[in-house]
Amino acid sequence: TAVEDRRRAVVYPAEQKYVQTQYGVYETLLSHFRNRLRENRPNNKLVVLGYSFSDEHINAVIEDSIRAEGSNLTVYAFVGPEEDAEEQENRFRKIAERCDHRFNVFMGQHSYISSSIEPEEWKEIKKLNLWNFEELVNIMVGDEQ
Image 1 (cartoon, rainbow, N blue to C red):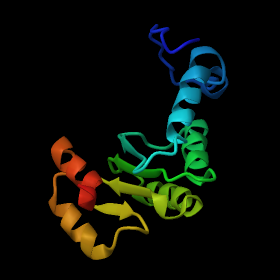
Image 2: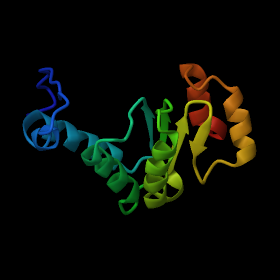
Image 3: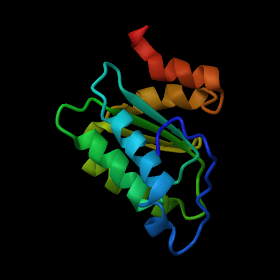
């Protein structure tokens, strides 16, 4: 199961999805994902678009990578608001609490969870088109240019 093996794979929603992802190509993909997140590089960021954080085995890889010794990984997630906004916010607050200030979630243009972004900054960010890739990159790079 080398990286050069370029066969396509799909994980279909099913009760056995978690078990299926622990074997074969899925195990390899998660292993590569985990290793990349844990690389100790300056300015190590994971930008997530559209993932609901409903798959606990993927969340565990992300959270463990944030909390790993020597990690400087910061996560920025941009997700659409769900029907049950309160449940969505509670789910993200729990993840954020476990990940300190390095887990930031923007739920559409209406809400965010982050201890590293001040309310005044959020007012400015809300004015931006977060779904425009160029503006998103400018937010990610920030003062680091």
